[in-house]
Image (cartoon, rainbow, N blue to C red; front, side, top):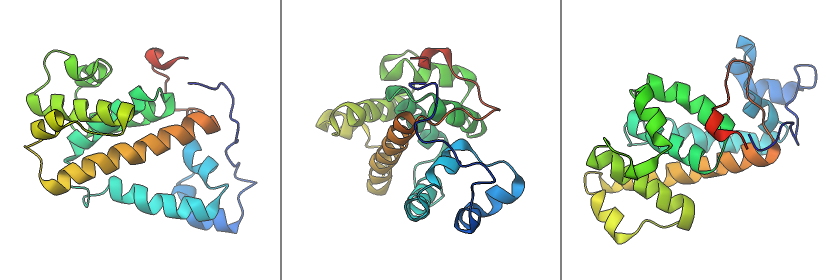
Amino acid sequence: MRLSTPRIPPLSDEEMGEEQTQLLGERFKTGKVFNIFRTLSRSPKAYKRFMLWGGYILSDANDLPERERELVILRVGFNWKSGYEWAQHERIGLRSGLSKTEIARVKLGPKADDWSPEDTALLQATDELTTDAFITDETWARLAFLSEKQKMDLVMTVGQYTQVCMMLNSFGVQLDDDLTLDPDLKK
């Protein structure tokens, strides 16, 4: 975590107006509203549009298989040193078919042993996008196992989660009570 306290505090239940309650919908009704949503809902119009795009990235409309999408998201979170992002998607990654060993290995990146050629290419592309905003020709060629749409979805997923990490890190969104900070992401 880059900040130990929020710069923009999450809305408490008492602070939420009708607009926020309506936007949070089912999340609010279940009683568990993550700090990211409580923070972003301070700007209801932005939150609404952000959720539409984020909804695409996490939906079946994104042609990256769920496991591969989570592999990429975890690498983005690690590269941007986002403790919140890592903690949330570590849990999602496990449900999406990544093993604990693979999740730990994400931190080592594409050069780590035991990745398949496909996973290596996905991680390399993610590293290139998060350092230079560009996938090299060599890495693009190694992504030949992906369709054109999947390659587009890869870039859009890295872009979406880069934005998410920027918000989480800069706003100081703190871990939800049920999450644990990875020791490698302590700043």
